[in-house]
Length: 189
Image 1 (cartoon, rainbow, N blue to C red):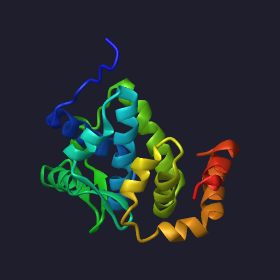
Image 2: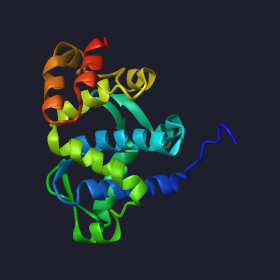
Image 3: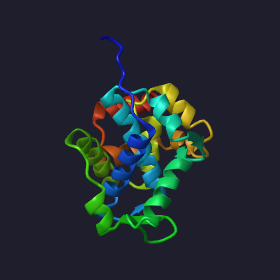
């Protein structure tokens, strides 16, 4: 059955994202900005891993290009819902941490998804918000058409272009990318 692409219902996808948000915030404070980018990157990786059309997932979450790359009001809504249901604690206007209730009732990931989220958690622990955005903008595994669309309204794209070497060094020093990937990123316009 070549070309088969499994589908995922909106409710199961939103439940998965709720679990990812709780998992990402279970041990550390995480700001909404990083959550937005982490969810985008998770959904991209998940779509590739499960052979699901990323465009359909992006539509289900109303992902749009924004000032700092991909943004989803739906993800913000999920964060607010998790706070109102007591699964996530708002520590400041933009910082969150999973509650014990959230960790015990949500934040459980199947092994086939957990490794994706652990990779993202590792990334989040090693880079600041701007470097995370740079990583998404220049990630060689995300197709150019996807990156171009989600960065089309970016207010920081030119900053990244003129500071590529700085961000690449941070990513290399953190062990996020290798020399070959760094050279590939440098070759991008």
